[in-house]
Length: 193
Image (cartoon, rainbow, N blue to C red; front, side, top):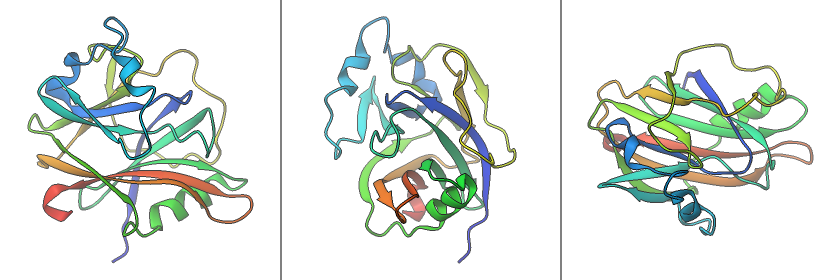
Protein backbone atom coordinates (compact mmCIF):
# COMPACT_ATOMS: atom_id res chain seq x y z
CA UNK A 1 0.00 0.00 0.00
CA UNK A 2 1.38 3.40 -1.00
CA UNK A 3 0.81 6.08 1.60
CA UNK A 4 0.17 9.65 0.57
CA UNK A 5 1.61 12.00 3.16
CA UNK A 6 0.50 15.59 3.73
CA UNK A 7 2.83 18.03 5.48
CA UNK A 8 0.88 19.64 8.36
CA UNK A 9 3.51 21.52 10.36
CA UNK A 10 7.01 21.73 11.76
CA UNK A 11 8.81 22.72 14.92
CA UNK A 12 12.39 23.69 15.71
CA UNK A 13 14.24 21.58 18.28
CA UNK A 14 17.42 22.65 20.02
CA UNK A 15 17.82 19.03 21.08
CA UNK A 16 15.00 19.12 23.63
CA UNK A 17 12.11 16.68 23.58
CA UNK A 18 8.61 17.59 22.44
CA UNK A 19 5.44 16.19 23.94
CA UNK A 20 2.41 14.90 22.04
CA UNK A 21 -0.47 14.68 24.51
CA UNK A 22 -4.27 14.84 24.47
CA UNK A 23 -5.02 18.54 24.20
CA UNK A 24 -7.33 18.35 27.24
CA UNK A 25 -4.28 17.59 29.40
CA UNK A 26 -1.74 20.01 27.97
CA UNK A 27 -2.02 22.42 30.93
CA UNK A 28 -0.99 19.56 33.25
CA UNK A 29 2.57 19.90 31.90
CA UNK A 30 4.54 22.50 33.86
CA UNK A 31 7.87 22.24 32.02
CA UNK A 32 9.06 25.70 32.94
CA UNK A 33 7.21 26.84 36.05
CA UNK A 34 7.56 23.55 37.99
CA UNK A 35 10.81 22.37 36.33
CA UNK A 36 9.11 19.28 34.90
CA UNK A 37 11.38 19.68 31.87
CA UNK A 38 14.11 18.15 34.04
CA UNK A 39 12.22 14.83 33.82
CA UNK A 40 13.15 14.63 30.11
CA UNK A 41 16.89 15.24 30.47
CA UNK A 42 18.19 11.85 31.58
CA UNK A 43 15.89 9.50 29.71
CA UNK A 44 17.29 6.49 27.87
CA UNK A 45 16.43 5.89 24.20
CA UNK A 46 13.85 3.28 25.24
CA UNK A 47 11.95 5.81 27.39
CA UNK A 48 9.68 7.43 24.81
CA UNK A 49 6.68 8.35 26.95
CA UNK A 50 5.89 10.29 30.13
CA UNK A 51 2.95 10.63 32.48
CA UNK A 52 1.41 14.09 32.30
CA UNK A 53 -1.27 14.41 34.96
CA UNK A 54 -3.51 11.37 34.44
CA UNK A 55 -2.52 10.99 30.76
CA UNK A 56 0.35 9.49 28.79
CA UNK A 57 2.36 11.74 26.47
CA UNK A 58 4.62 10.59 23.66
CA UNK A 59 8.09 12.11 23.41
CA UNK A 60 8.71 13.09 19.78
CA UNK A 61 11.70 14.83 18.26
CA UNK A 62 15.20 15.43 19.46
CA UNK A 63 17.58 12.78 18.09
CA UNK A 64 20.91 14.53 18.62
CA UNK A 65 22.72 12.12 16.29
CA UNK A 66 20.79 13.25 13.19
CA UNK A 67 21.37 16.91 14.12
CA UNK A 68 21.75 18.79 17.38
CA UNK A 69 19.49 21.64 16.28
CA UNK A 70 16.90 20.82 13.67
CA UNK A 71 13.45 21.08 12.22
CA UNK A 72 11.10 18.21 12.92
CA UNK A 73 8.57 17.95 10.09
CA UNK A 74 5.06 16.65 10.80
CA UNK A 75 3.02 14.65 8.27
CA UNK A 76 -0.34 12.87 8.24
CA UNK A 77 -1.45 10.11 5.87
CA UNK A 78 -4.98 9.20 4.76
CA UNK A 79 -5.39 6.55 7.48
CA UNK A 80 -4.64 9.02 10.28
CA UNK A 81 -1.00 8.04 10.94
CA UNK A 82 1.11 10.98 12.12
CA UNK A 83 4.82 11.05 11.31
CA UNK A 84 7.40 13.31 12.94
CA UNK A 85 10.63 13.29 10.92
CA UNK A 86 14.03 14.80 11.65
CA UNK A 87 16.20 14.66 8.52
CA UNK A 88 19.66 15.65 7.33
CA UNK A 89 21.14 15.52 3.85
CA UNK A 90 21.83 17.59 0.75
CA UNK A 91 18.41 16.84 -0.82
CA UNK A 92 16.08 17.53 2.10
CA UNK A 93 12.85 16.50 0.36
CA UNK A 94 14.42 13.24 -0.82
CA UNK A 95 15.50 12.32 2.73
CA UNK A 96 12.04 13.19 4.09
CA UNK A 97 10.40 10.99 1.44
CA UNK A 98 12.79 8.11 2.22
CA UNK A 99 12.05 8.44 5.95
CA UNK A 100 8.30 8.32 5.32
CA UNK A 101 8.65 5.28 3.03
CA UNK A 102 10.94 3.36 5.42
CA UNK A 103 9.29 0.25 6.93
CA UNK A 104 8.36 0.39 10.61
CA UNK A 105 8.62 -3.31 11.51
CA UNK A 106 11.93 -2.82 13.38
CA UNK A 107 10.90 0.42 15.11
CA UNK A 108 10.87 0.66 18.90
CA UNK A 109 7.35 0.23 20.31
CA UNK A 110 6.27 3.03 22.61
CA UNK A 111 3.23 3.80 24.75
CA UNK A 112 -0.38 4.30 23.75
CA UNK A 113 -1.38 7.96 23.84
CA UNK A 114 -5.05 8.78 24.33
CA UNK A 115 -6.76 11.54 22.35
CA UNK A 116 -10.32 11.55 23.67
CA UNK A 117 -10.61 15.33 23.23
CA UNK A 118 -10.23 15.01 19.45
CA UNK A 119 -6.96 16.96 19.43
CA UNK A 120 -3.31 16.31 20.13
CA UNK A 121 -1.18 19.12 21.49
CA UNK A 122 2.47 19.07 20.40
CA UNK A 123 4.90 21.43 22.14
CA UNK A 124 8.41 21.68 23.56
CA UNK A 125 8.79 20.04 26.96
CA UNK A 126 10.81 23.10 28.06
CA UNK A 127 7.66 25.26 28.43
CA UNK A 128 4.33 24.98 30.21
CA UNK A 129 1.53 23.36 28.23
CA UNK A 130 -0.83 26.30 28.65
CA UNK A 131 1.14 28.54 26.24
CA UNK A 132 0.43 29.65 22.68
CA UNK A 133 -0.87 27.07 20.20
CA UNK A 134 -1.92 27.22 16.56
CA UNK A 135 -3.78 24.64 14.49
CA UNK A 136 -1.77 22.33 12.25
CA UNK A 137 -2.57 22.98 8.60
CA UNK A 138 -1.65 21.38 5.27
CA UNK A 139 1.12 22.99 3.28
CA UNK A 140 4.01 22.26 0.93
CA UNK A 141 6.87 20.05 2.02
CA UNK A 142 9.85 22.30 2.79
CA UNK A 143 12.47 22.19 0.03
CA UNK A 144 15.39 22.67 2.39
CA UNK A 145 16.26 22.51 6.04
CA UNK A 146 16.40 26.34 6.38
CA UNK A 147 17.43 28.43 9.42
CA UNK A 148 15.63 28.19 12.77
CA UNK A 149 12.61 30.15 13.88
CA UNK A 150 13.10 33.29 15.92
CA UNK A 151 12.06 32.58 19.49
CA UNK A 152 10.06 29.59 20.68
CA UNK A 153 7.65 28.09 18.14
CA UNK A 154 4.04 27.98 19.32
CA UNK A 155 2.68 24.54 20.03
CA UNK A 156 0.56 22.79 17.41
CA UNK A 157 -2.95 21.46 17.81
CA UNK A 158 -3.56 18.48 15.55
CA UNK A 159 -7.13 17.31 14.94
CA UNK A 160 -7.34 13.54 15.37
CA UNK A 161 -10.30 13.17 12.97
CA UNK A 162 -12.02 10.66 15.26
CA UNK A 163 -8.92 8.74 16.38
CA UNK A 164 -9.07 8.32 20.16
CA UNK A 165 -5.70 6.60 20.77
CA UNK A 166 -2.33 6.25 19.06
CA UNK A 167 0.53 3.79 19.48
CA UNK A 168 4.00 5.36 19.26
CA UNK A 169 6.74 3.72 17.16
CA UNK A 170 10.24 5.23 17.11
CA UNK A 171 13.10 4.80 14.65
CA UNK A 172 16.22 6.48 16.00
CA UNK A 173 19.15 7.61 13.83
CA UNK A 174 18.97 5.78 10.51
CA UNK A 175 21.73 6.18 7.93
CA UNK A 176 20.45 5.99 4.35
CA UNK A 177 23.89 6.52 2.78
CA UNK A 178 27.02 8.49 3.60
CA UNK A 179 25.23 11.87 3.23
CA UNK A 180 21.64 11.25 4.31
CA UNK A 181 20.05 10.21 7.60
CA UNK A 182 16.84 10.58 9.59
CA UNK A 183 14.97 9.76 12.78
CA UNK A 184 11.20 9.17 12.82
CA UNK A 185 8.37 9.01 15.36
CA UNK A 186 5.08 7.49 14.17
CA UNK A 187 1.77 7.87 15.98
CA UNK A 188 -0.38 5.07 14.57
CA UNK A 189 -4.12 4.93 15.29
CA UNK A 190 -4.40 2.23 17.95
CA UNK A 191 -6.91 0.20 15.92
CA UNK A 192 -4.33 0.06 13.09
CA UNK A 193 -1.31 -0.68 15.30
